Amino acid sequence: MNISPELIGYVAAALTTLSFLPQAILTLKTRDTESLSLSMYSAFTLGVLLWLVYGLVIADKAIIFANAITLLLASFILALKVRNTLFRKR
Image (cartoon, rainbow, N blue to C red; front, side, top):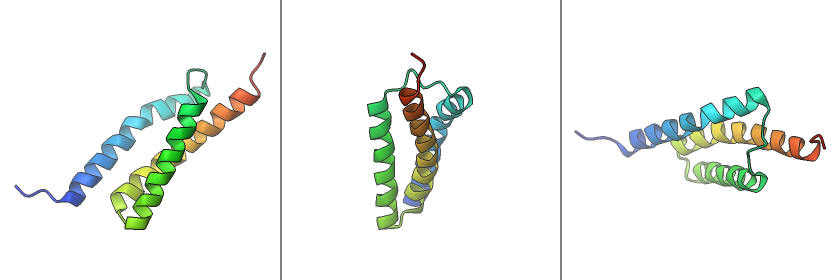
């Protein structure tokens, strides 16, 4: 059996992106970001952005696909975390 590296990339991209979805959906639905670390989520979002840029530079569709979706979700959650941190009830 000969599995192409591209297929492995798409399966890996799908699995990592799908594994992120339940937490992202829950956070977006409840708007609860109390348990999320702002520094960790900032670093995570920046890392995803850099993976996306890397995918664009090397023209790897699997990396571009996975990181574009993850960046969109992570950016929404990071924005929500920043908003909740700045305007939390005291």
